[in-house]
Length: 93
View 1 (cartoon, helix red, strand yellow):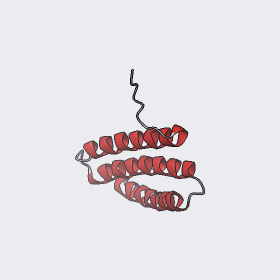
View 2 (cartoon, rainbow, N blue to C red; view 1 turned 60 degrees about the vertical axis):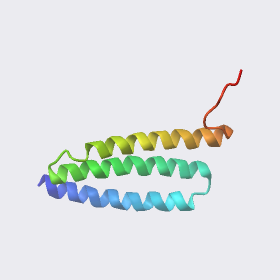
View 3 (cartoon, helix red, strand yellow; view 1 turned 180 degrees about the vertical axis):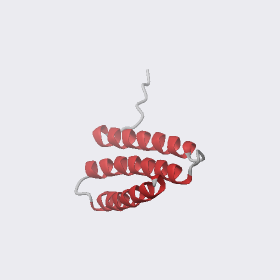
View 4 (cartoon, one colour; view 1 turned 90 degrees about the horizontal axis):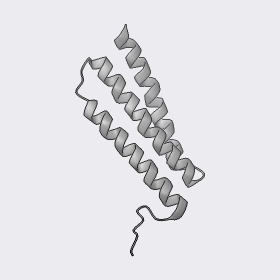
């Protein structure tokens, strides 16, 4: 029963991933693309989590951690770049 629910949720998350890709490509502004990229990372984390539940394993825990870190850092870096144009500020005294 739990596996069938996990597969149904993975199908719904797959549709969500496709819609995120569409928004990532067609987004009217760069800010919409950044939000779509962040949502894509979160959705991928959920998909991998459901895959772990369906397979009854803990093999993909590191994958979830890496996806979370990369999604966060990518969103912060792109937002910082769009805000001011400089990702890493260097103070030269």
